[in-house]
Structures are given as structure tokens and as C-alpha cells.
Image (cartoon, rainbow, N blue to C red):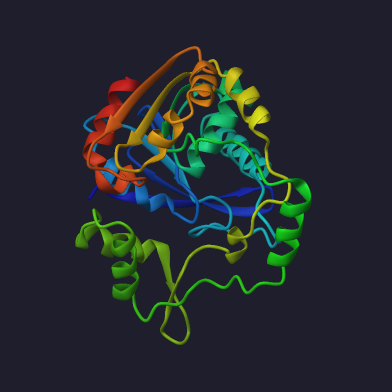
Length: 288
């Protein structure tokens, strides 16, 4: 495995853990992980890169080794503000290349529209969302959020890292034993009683009571000047559900002026775990 280094950057009152690979003088590439994931999940993709990159991958607030917010919920505007500060820290003088997976892709897509001049190329890995952007009516959503404030959101404990790895493989049968063992060492934290829990603030389990609307998301996408590559896992199901609604799929794809689309076979939602070699080839071909 290619070695990584860890550093902590103070961002808006939170110590942000950032994992980096490669030399600082190489072209910079920012990798953004998904919900309740960690920066180390990109290890297999980084190992598959053929060219030299200075890869920078943060643990989002409330995930991995980064600090928790202490709030009842996590908000997308906070992620955007954090990303803006991190880019200013690592790459203050030039447009950047960003790759995001799932939630990280959603954050990257919003940022590429809101800060168009800061992003030169953007890769969205299985993060262009479900086929509908409709939300629950406000009364129902607010009531659900208030109910969740009373719920026990503690992370599920596992007897050991091995049990945690088996659970991850049951959710993703394509995850090899070696990769599962590596991931849970970064996903998990051993408690005083010897059990293992996920390194993620349980508040992530609560919904956002005031989400972005579909119209607001598309407004951001339409302001994107960066070249965009959509990559989906052929077995994730997201692409099929998106294409089942021609009107919505057309609205999303037409939001970008420079869009390429690639499908990765034998891969589910976690393309960076299932087919990191093919993902790395697609990223490098697009970025270079």
C-alpha cells in the first residue's frame, strides 16, 4: 500500500483530520468520502493510480478522526464551508480537481456550482442521487426530526473488528477479506469494554429538518463551469432509477455544459471498494 500521512487543520472550530498521499509538489487531487465513511476508504484507489499525485482527503466533521460538531444534526452548508476553508489551506492559488463519492459527491457538486472559479474538474462517483428530488412535506419532516431527537442514536457495538468486517461484507459481498479488515481498522474505534463502534457521530443518523430543495440543487449545478464526469457502479441501481424518469434525468444531465458519463461493471454503490483499479483509470484519464 502507498503510505499516507495525517495532519490536523483547524476549520471553523473543528480539528479536521486530513489524510494525504504523495509529494506536495505533485498535482493536487482532492478526494471526498461519503456518509459515515472515512478518508482511508480511498486507499485502494490511490494504490491504483499510475501517475504521481498529491492526494488530499479529509475526514468530514463528525467522521473518522475529525472532531464532532456537538450539534443535533449535520448540515450541508457546514460541509461546504469546511471544504472552502480546506481548499484555501491546501490550494489557495489555483483551481482544484475534486473527486467525491456519494455524500462527498453531493457536496462537491454543490460547491462546484457555488464556487465555480475554484474547481477545474469534478468527478461524481455514484452520487448523483435518487431519481426524485421531492421531499416530505415540511410538517412531516419537522415532526420526524423532533421525534429523532428523542431516539437513541448510539452507534451499534460489535464484539470485535472481525465481526465488524463480516457485517460490512454482508452489506457488500464484493468487499474482499483483506479490504474489509483494512477498512474496519479506520471505520471502527475500540471502546473501554472491548467492543468496536463506528467512528462517526451518531447525530449523522438524524435527518436534516430543512434540506436543500431539488430546484436549489439544480440551480447550483447549472452554475458549474468545471468539466464533470459522472461514474456509477453498474450494480448500484442509482443509474437505472434515474433513467426511469426521463424528465428528471434530462433536467439533471442538461444542468451541466460539459458532462461525461461512465459505468463501472461489477460494482455497487461503493465503486472505490469494488473496482478501485478501474475507477483510478477513469479518474486519471479525465483529470489529465
